Amino acid sequence: DWSSDVCSSDLVGTKGEVISLEPNSASRLRLQQRIKRVRLTNVQVFSCAAWSSTTDVQLLISGPLEATSHVVSGREGDGNKVLGRSLDSIVRESASRRVSFIKIDVEGAEVEVLRGAVETLLAHRPTVLCEIGSENQESTSVSVMNLFEILKAVNYVCLDVKTDRKGTRLNSS
Image (spheres, one colour):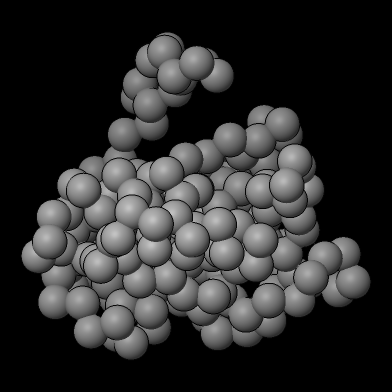
């Protein structure tokens, strides 16, 4: 969301860069307005969804102000067609000299996003924060295992930190 992009801008400072991917046009407009209002010069917004490759994907939008969205694949007609792009292609296009942190909050498409970020993970070795949550615990468990497999294949150490809805840490493994 836009608040994490604004906070990230402060964290990286004037010499750092924040790359934000926002496929939801309403959310992207709010983000761009906020960036302009607070005069951020180090946030670059891309009009696409993070995915494993360059392809059209379906974006399902819901919630108040259409602020909640998630990408699904292979379900033609279930949402708005948007461009999906790999993080690797975005990083190459942005000419970022250094990627030090990747935040992934993609409501079920985490594995697809990481499949499209392997080059970036190997070249830059950024810290990765990936939020995973689902009403369907079984699919979430499979997703976490697949996610860990991708990260371990590129020599990352994975921590599974569980919190409740208020952000209180429950346990880690």
